[in-house]
Image 1 (cartoon, rainbow, N blue to C red):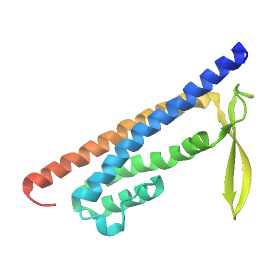
Image 2: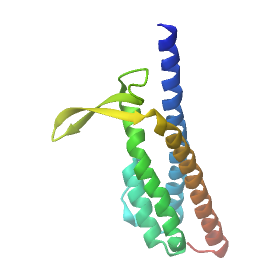
Image 3: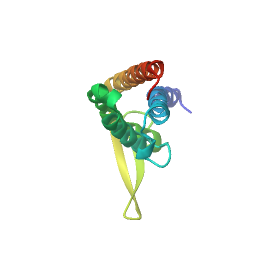
Image 4: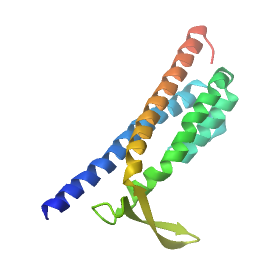
Length: 168
């Protein structure tokens, strides 16, 4: 492999690796939040099983904040976090499940190829992420992790108050 190719591979691996790491941090906080909502509030009736995939987690969490009286004041803050998960999950999904089409940026874009299934048929789609947009994506993912962690901490404090008061 030529030195330039090694450098390009290293750069794209670092860029996409940061997306994986930061998404993992954010989703770990979401998982802790889901555990709190599932175990500490009367929200189990909303689903038969605890959700494990992102879309069902977000759907459950939204419903939980809407029905748990002690969480009503946090509903707007929670929705802002959940909306960021929705928004960033699309880019994250394409980067993680796409195949790198070029190690070096092409016309200022990271370029991937992604297979999608629609109507029981595979479709090939080109994914282009502007290199100039990457720093904002990284910052947005860091902020999502912080926001999700703060929301989870706040809900944990609500649980502690509930437990101290003897009720759920």
